[in-house]
Length: 231
Length: 347
Image (cartoon, rainbow over the protein chains, first blue to last red):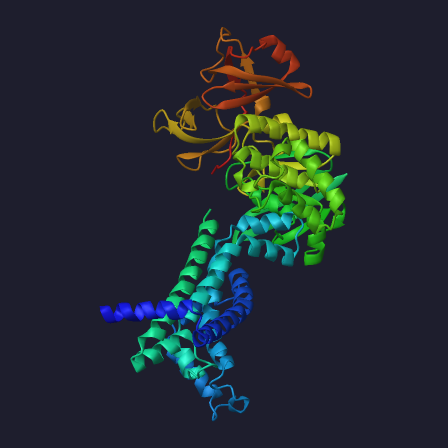
């Protein structure tokens, strides 16, 4: 117990001192996670909106497929992307393996279905009368779509935050596609795993504290948005 | 001028015909009431008149021009017609932003926009809520705000789906007054749906009745759901019907066929109803007694509404009315002419 307390106190000191190595790890984590979330939102929100409003045959199959993809293990995605970007893969010449770009691609694949599925749910919950009202007041198709997006904004915001929470705490993709290279692709989760393997808990606990703080912040934001949405 | 002209309009949902109108013309500048029971197709017809739905078949002209179902053309037409829903929904924004929505879409200058918002709010008496969140208004205020949102756009046609159905008596009176004001001051054509026959008679210059998706040939305002019974099993036994489970009415010999089943709907022609003083000798066993609840002039006739357990409207000529002189609250004897009653579902 005293060992844990000592590690905890040392970790708090490390976090408080803004250790450069720790800051670099946090920066890599935030950069890759934010970019992956932004890309997934750019694709997932319009796709979710289009699927929610489409009357295409097989729509339910698409939604079921998306919901299935939510449970996709990160190591499976890591393996899948590795096949394409390793030296022998078709994108091998691009030298993407063990770069932040590779991590972003993998994380994008992880959370794009999540953003899409949650956007479909959020848009489907928007009262159909908003669409009818916008149209009778003279709105065209795009203006009507904007009204629906506006009314579903809290649900869509929650989808984005949820995706960010998922991606910042994943380890499989970062480890397999990033390679945990110090200063370049080492993220909070991969660094924690490494420190654990080394039996050095101070940095691991410090990173854990930062990760917990970020997760807490994201969840507080998520709850605030859900609260407003539920009004 | 004929504003809308509908010919052979049919609308289907999942293969089921919900609206089948052979011919309908609506004059500009008038108030039209659309009566009918739930599921009769009133809202579907309003959606078609609002260019929100395209009928499955048939032709429609608006202001003499054929309505082409192209998205661009329909958008142009939608900007001349506004539909106010039975339960209007407000965008999650302020009251003034809600009214501004349609004006912004039409790219109206901001100064003009603000003026129109103020005018519309003043018309419906909601100026003090200008900066309030629209979702915080009561049901009646929301209905008035929906009217203001429509009025700000100065539409040629205002379509209202049961505008007073879900508001209190005070707001009902305000909304009815507003509709009359909009029609008389701005010449806006108004089409509204209602279940309230009296409201339709009081407000509208033209009444339409929808029954099972079809326009009824006459204004079936005395149209009631009923169950049938006979004194005995004999074929020529006296047939009775029970209106809305409350009024036991002995039917005269029917010329319109026999009932299809144990229940159905019937119509009593208001012009074939005569009212007598209660002390008048009964002519037959078919008279029933009721209380006068309303009397109002309607053209060269007098409409008298009698409560016989259900509200029954009688349309009397002035001579008959003066002979009986029914006072509000007075008891009267109601007598039906032999051909007054028509069964709507007959074999």
